[in-house]
Image (cartoon, rainbow, N blue to C red; front, side, top):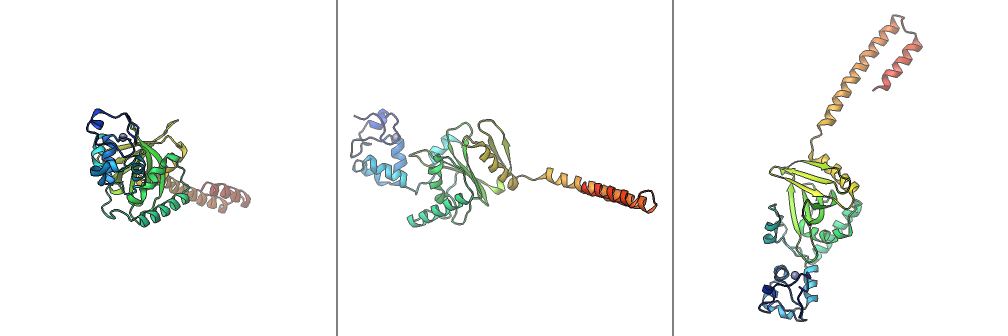
Length: 277
Ligand SMILES: [Zn+2]
């Protein structure tokens, strides 16, 4: 008799096997966690589980593009907002395919450099993004101090993190633009950290896959979310110094007029001053 869950491979507990309810048509047994997840996709499982084989369940879980956020599991991980796509509801199969194609084209255009492990998350995007919501930038990312590896992306209205382990539901978090105060970045030799400072918390993501690409992503979102004060300051400095240059030019012109500087000396000094602009 099997003592491991046919889907996740975890050791079965006595509760999983107690009543023999989790037995599949081919002798595999599901753990209660997997059964719960699969039955969210197809409620029929609960009453007729023994009619399904492990292949059926795998197909259901893998191709069940219609996977929505699992609230109960979420609370055990972190108390973060959950995206529920109430606006668009569930996509029809054709619309899902069309959207996935569009999204993949956007990723191509962005030259998205993602690990192969991001494939599962990308397949979730048609269900997460609004029909007209474009991806502006994307990177591999993982919630700091968790095993929730996935992707972090920015659209015109929000930053979204998606994390999906094999055979389980996607964990989706959104940070709406109006709630983001700023973003910051901690360089690190192995895995830099991208921080999103929201009105009520700071969320941190590590990027193990490609630290340069993660930094590019940060440089992009920083332009959107951070007020660029240092930039303004340097512009001010520049205007001040160009004013000084013009002042000196005027003095030079006077010196030439009064015959102190020759035409050539004046031209040379003028050239030097203008180079400072
Ligand atoms: Zn399981």
